[in-house]
Image (cartoon, rainbow, N blue to C red):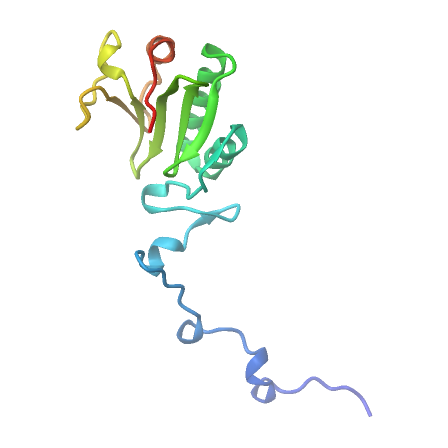
Length: 174
């Protein structure tokens, strides 16, 4: 007696591949399943490609956030991270509210990054005190923003000056 493979029609239902109609739907309380489909290295990407990273202190969660970004956003976030580390030796890092934060231990956070579909938003939490003022306004009186878009010139000299100034000011403490 030989072990002949069974015809496809006789394969048990448990061994059939899932079809579109039989795929399980992942539902959460506040999000549609379509918003949870994309992931990079097992990290879920929220709307706009913003990585969903658990709140944590240190460089590792920030690096996980950056590594989950794709294309030009990954390149720009890496450049920002390296620039901040170079300008502010010993900078404190964390991911909170799905955004990397940079600060001075005991003084609070001076800068945050958040990604959107078409740009990366850099928040200077005491941006109102920076010279020249970063261009983006905020609902918060003291915060100013810089939006970085694809194919835009990365003004490293200007950003470095803002990071130096921001790190020297008292930071934001949530």
